[in-house]
Length: 459
Image 1 (cartoon, rainbow, N blue to C red):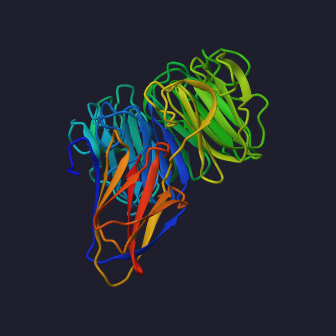
Image 2 (spheres, rainbow, N blue to C red; image 1 turned 135 degrees about the vertical axis):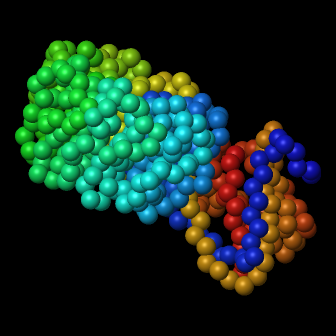
Image 3 (tube, rainbow, N blue to C red; image 1 turned 90 degrees about the vertical axis):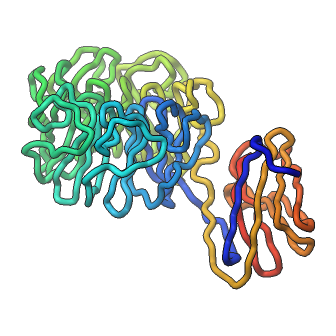
């Protein structure tokens, strides 16, 4: 069979053959942009899905309703999902960004979009990153840098000029945690105080006023805050006692205090105790309790509260069916949660596939993301040479493996490493019918004697 442009081609050419064993890979961190979602896998690679008009998925310009791996990106330790761009922190302390760049979001000194990761200029020793229309980066010495959109002073450098390279936030030292909101920024200092800067028309800065600020101002909240989150025009703070406090815009009930009035000073979210994690969507909020349950409130047009309805709520509602959850994230109209086993669950708007469940239908109840963080193949060197090429015919669902010999064996495995099929190899080429397999990520292992080689393929 000849290879055509309609085939999916995977080639693995090795100077050495390998004994290979699939290892379980799981999700370990979440981030949600406006219409796309990022998941950091425990192997240091990033999976993402959803809208991709500006290349924010990092693997071309096509939308995807199933998880894809970001190209050319490994050893990642933290991720940030901007509105239409993405950022990743590598283990060496460098930052890499991709997607929309008209406002300088990629921080590389240009305003040109990129559909592959490119390094953010001039930053080293970064320990945290957070993204929306602009980005924040925290370095190991407690300094905060910002770049991107700055009309309201959200970069915190005393100006209202956008920047396509990182600039230091003025007068802010000893920072231990950061959070981007859509038009303002938040930080916790090592003395437990909370600081904010940027847009303040609805009281987002929590300082008792409504004036924008292009430099940090202190939030009127006690000094026992351990985590921050920011939405479109509101802020959340998690205190060490497990309570959640909110301030800013409240038209959709996103403050969770039982009314819909804005406030420029922090107030307690009603009925929530034992909280261990918080997150904001554009107009909705999420929290994880110490019993592994998820609670949501605010805007619910697309079902992003996940309670089986599409009605807004100005008090927290439990998301049914979720247990063992350890992390949450919220986008424009979607929500995502991760359990302690590294499985991910999504609900809400799905126009662009941002729920990652293989469909484009909205849902107001959680659905599991399939094919997330596919199995990583670990390899151990032995002496020999093997060379195979794998072709999947997109219509006939026939897997063609070239480079085989009659004394070899082919084994098909799913993403968990479970054996699905074993086939005797043919001379030079082997065909395998795969039409009965569901869509997803698979592996084919070719074995000759004590040597084998593995390649992944997508059904």
